[in-house]
Figure 1 (cartoon, rainbow, N blue to C red):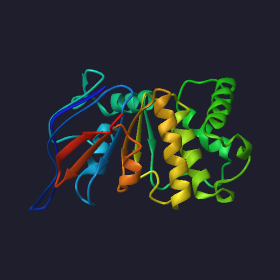
Figure 2 (tube, helix red, strand yellow):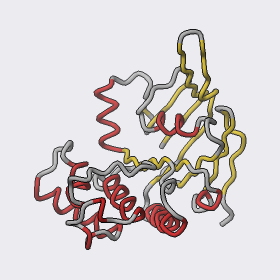
Figure 3 (cartoon, helix red, strand yellow):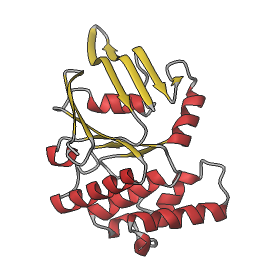
Figure 4 (tube, helix red, strand yellow):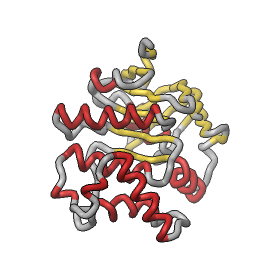
Length: 226
């Protein structure tokens, strides 16, 4: 699905140049669950942003489904993101003035989807992640784990092929963090491709492959024993 070769990202400010990614080579196959680990500032989130086309590389190649991303226009990048990628963030980014249902359905308003189809898909995904009984609640009425479930549902409702999760358990206590990780693992067994940035070795163990980074480079990769 994803193929990166010598992928680099350099940030420049006045006379200061910072290399966030240094010639990364990485492939992500359909159906994988990959955890990216490393200390703060090692390039994990930069790599995730490049995968999600929220940022552009300054060097190298990035193929998404065989198509080179670097030369695409902003409009085309937005189309690919909308059609194929779902994002889950550390901060849930829910709109507190909206109900659970409305927060999830919001993700479909930018798609060519009828009102009836939006309702059907929202109902299905709420059932899938276990928040249907909270459909009318506001985010402030939910626990942290429930809010993250709603955020996952919002990422899933457009049926993306790739889910990018940036520290999805970072704002959760241990119990709710484990709850979200079990849900992500279940989604992966159902066929979703997931790439997750995490600081937690325990949560990385839910993935089928772990990628360790340091100073903008990949140090090592290992697969979880079957």
